Length: 231
Picture 1 (cartoon, one colour):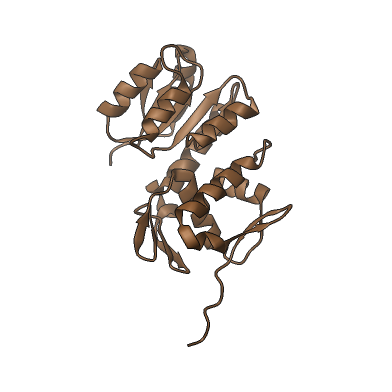
Picture 2: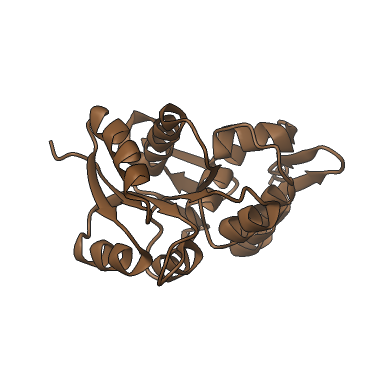
């Protein structure tokens, strides 16, 4: 079986080696890039990269620009690393489709754990198998495809995970903290606007079915399909 391939992008060679060593111990294949240009070259050349760990502050092309270009053609999961830890940077990253945001210094073990969680959620483990259907919305977790009344809908990685989580918990009131812990897979102590932004985009993409995602003011959201009238 081919090893899962991860691209690590950081202008600090010591940081790249640290992350690479921990990932390789878990059986991953690791590619390295020292700047944004090299990262994009590798990404376009190696078509089977499963996940990217991307530093923000780099020479030539920064992490945000790299992520923006990659998102034009790919939904590959991205974990962004930063030394700043500023809320505005995190929100900017999530707007670009970043899946995780980790501030330096960080625990390599925690980083590897998050890599594993994202890969499982992206369909590379048993967790990603099967389909779930509610109210005309079908989520195929293995193929990573969503259809609404038979029509395919393009969702980002996090939008897909958010919709899947809503369907799995139909009728249950979900707090923002609960959603962050399960969909983002870690305790998030920043601004909950991250969730609100993703919910707004998800509602728009699934059209009239977006009404199934109810806002619970002061708490979070609930996915609820109305009862069909008897006929």
